[in-house]
Image (cartoon, rainbow, N blue to C red):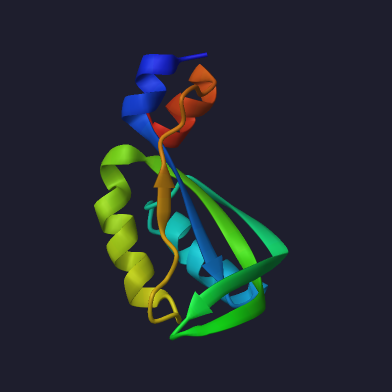
Length: 109
């Protein structure tokens, strides 16, 4: 495993969508445009949150995107542009360790 390289080279981005179709549409565009190496879609995520002073409970689809760290700003901008939510969840996590071959694939190195 590569510790130092993974911290500098790759991000995992979490983003929820109202349904699997919208998640698939947007994530396909992100991968097609080379903004993400891959996206995993996890349907049936239950989200409980406060929005405009009210507690909400919705079924959503979670997208888990893997991308080179230097591409985050462009991916974030495109997600905001395409996403149907007023305030989309876009949370980037820097992995502590990543398999070296997988890291090379994600980052194109």
